[in-house]
Image (cartoon, rainbow, N blue to C red; front, side, top):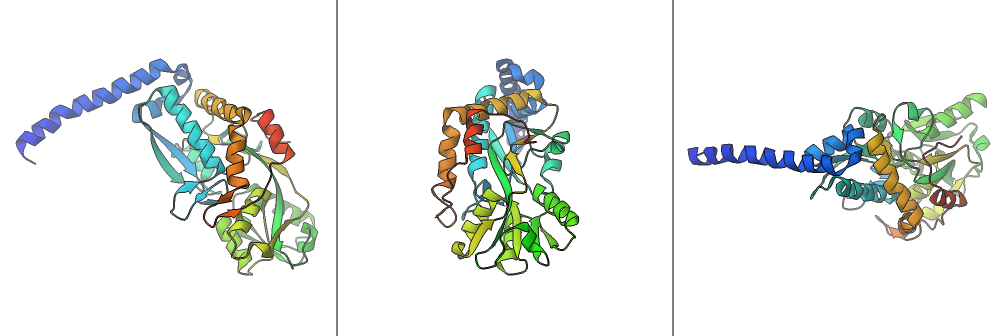
Length: 309
């Protein structure tokens, strides 16, 4: 590098650092939540927020045909990002997208790799000991997906059959526990993610896939012949999804909850729901044709961050 250019770079660098410091200082002065939030202070200084997303949780958070992250939960998360940008008065806020799995999502939130994860994570009392959950964004029940002509109607019919679950999910824990108390006659397999689990089912390696019902409808929509598959079984549990954050950061949680609550109460969340559950969605343009459940409509009217009992 020529000496003149080196001198110019040496002179410019302190001004860039000063500008970044001044912007961060302005953000800190503008937001009273910063005093309660290590996450917001770091975002203000770096101008970057790290977002955890799923790769195949259709229609919540997944890759479309162009490998862009899309989905109901992801769209809600992007609205929260805008609220963060506005709160900190940042002219620009870089989004760092981090793919996560059912197995590693909580660890990546805990160690600071991810600031906010909005996908298909169930808020449970056990998980609340590891991470914080936002105002809930969805309500699901755990069921199973089988071939239309399989003759399988409920979990008791799986005796002597093979079933797959996604590793690290509440469905895995529930089905393993149910199997142990019913003679252990189901052969259980674990998959890395929901896409791999459905591939095992579609190729005949297993007879059933157990998962949250909304996710099962999403996997069915991706099938070569969706009409060959049916969601069935008495629900083993009812659960709520929330966005995950690090524990002990009340300022960041307050901001996330405030924006999600606004979206739920204003009707914007319902419009986003309609776009992903009652309209054609990528990658195949299929329509899940799922009207909102009564439980979800109640959540929209009475937002809460509480896990279901």
